[in-house]
Image 1 (cartoon, rainbow, N blue to C red):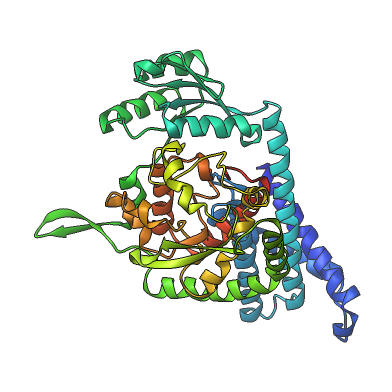
Image 2 (cartoon, one colour):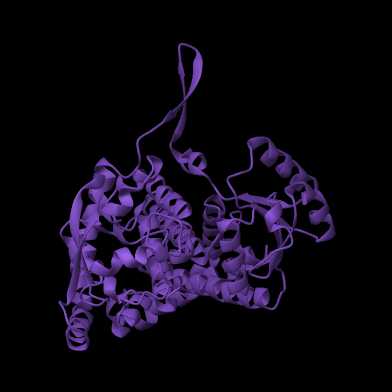
Length: 462
């Protein structure tokens, strides 16, 4: 209710400011007679009701937004739709006299003020969470890689509003062990007791090892205690957006439709890539020139590291990076391969001795990846998509993992803004598949926005 009242006040203030901007600042557009402010105040109640109704219809007051970007996106859509409805009413009903320029000004001002209010509220909420106020006591079921990643994320960022109280896991070898400050209390059968004794408010299943019956039992227990329930999706859950009900001769069937990123959508994404990469090359050209010189001056060898990668539908292409390793790094790979710190087709080693001092800095902030913007312009990559794998990695893929090759690889992707090197490979692939199944230009835009703090903080990069 507080949010509704605050929005109403901001909308009123926005229209008053829009009135003064139109008739007191834009003097060169001033009409012969200036309407008095009271004329606008008399219809503001009607305008506020329209805007609040639109906000309610699009879910601004009912949806639980997982992040600020999603809420700001819905807010932008709500303000824009409300403005268009108001302009439509002005066109259809001439007696409802309000300057169209005032409405346009109000669109910009209200969007700015409403967005600022939500940004302030978001920061205040994070500060309260960081002090332990209002956090959710969370129980994680499954102390595997994904469960430990969740515990790590929660421990690193107190502002997200979660307090990981405990793990439950059926693996006896993990009993009593502590991962990122969270202890494994016992088997999953203790879920009811742990919920009651530790005042759990949310349960997260972070393993794919639980059967459907067990999950239903856990959900039932959670519902009894009014506890929220979340589950890390598996492959079948990820394709749910493409499931349609059908029938054949009276027999019910479930149809899996084609992936969304095809045809017109693929052409739209490619058009956006061409425009944005061309603009991006112009903007970052000073950075490209600077680091090209630094690479050349600080170590022997070429400026660029050109490597064969696997792209769309398994086609090989040459990917460009600033060279961050010594000249003969590839020749030393067989000796280092057994030292990989991840159990996956990817090779990851935190203190790779082949990396130069400048290369370590470039990797920390992903500067070595910038030349790939030329791969985007050439059509071999996209700005957003699964990261392009090496041929030797693809040779180890299972059939379902090869689905990440159905779209152009990207400079950044959902996996890169969701943990990067911390993520187990299978979970990285699941994120890529989620991206493919749920693609939209807005999802691309959100990933690009989330890439900025991920790059600046260097989270998961090595």
